[in-house]
Image 1 (cartoon, one colour):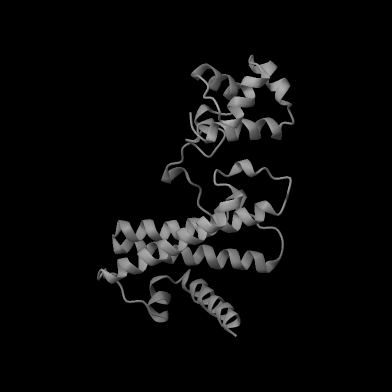
Image 2 (cartoon, one colour):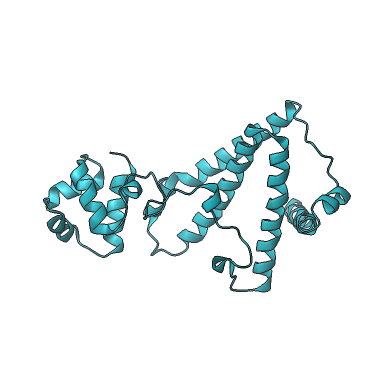
Length: 223
């Protein structure tokens, strides 16, 4: 099996407030055997995997860690919704500042990824994406941990080590991204406030404001 299966069947059982004894009875195994499965001491067979998927109403792909979604859905690029105004998940609650900052970041990323695409360099795409993925992952995980009722089983990396791993991985991604630039990668366009405004009339002001806000934060930190 793999590391995801023990973690997920334990998390699903606890989320549903089912005792290990009851789950074992429902799944047709002894409590001792189920305990071994949940601890990863023993590996189950295919029949038990299917039973667990049916019992908890999730897919086998999810239990095996092949899909992050309980339904087992594998997203293709054309299936990912765009963050436009018609997307119901795009509705923001809270302060005007929260909405503003979200738009500044989302609009700036439109420019960043357009520049990356025009570089036609897969290494730059991977390193930039890894860095941004890790940044969002880290912020979300911190917010997630603020509610002690949230199960840590959503994540495969233990909470005791993830922060150090994220910091190291982000530093490595950034260092390798700089190294890619040292390989004389030539971007197809010269960038300035003027060219950004000309080439990205809808998004340039967001990026320029994001740069200003970021440097203000850096200046405050440097005082």
